[in-house]
Length: 192
Image (cartoon, rainbow, N blue to C red; front, side, top):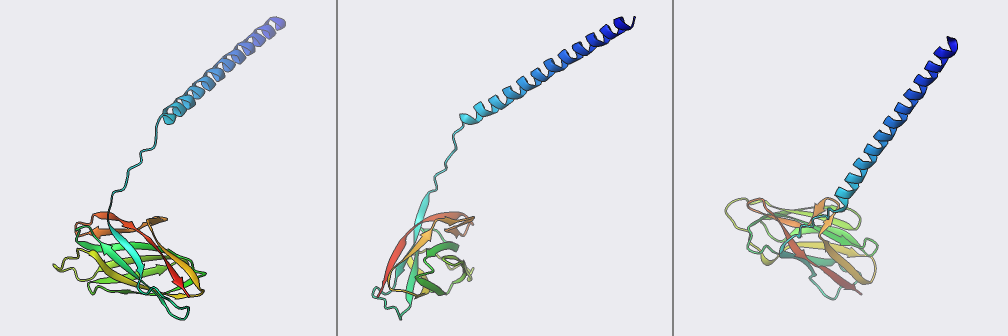
């Protein structure tokens, strides 16, 4: 009788083992199918690139073409708002801090105030309209800001308006708080 019970116990263990192996195989098979379905579904998706329409421009240019090492580098920021009434704008400007040192910024338009953050080679410039009355601010290539730098060396010094840097972007905002991205430029200044 003991051998009979022992045989039944062995039979039950073998059946349980076979059932566990079959269940494990089914689970592994289902998991592989889910992974393959996910891989197939993401392979066929191409990223959507939304083109940014650029309107107007923000350009930097030098005010004086023959700059001596003892003088300052004066740049002016010109803005064309493409017919939009501007209430604020942000500009990101890159420069080489080994060749030039940022000094200050001045607003050339009395209706706008400029705020800057200089991050060793990158200036984040925010210009906000202070006079929010009915005076329109539609720019047509107007000089809005003067940036002043002190040269550290002679030679070519580059300044570039960046479209973006981290989460910040170069843009202007109209009276309806719509964001508009402008065309931008870069300039090279020669210091003797």
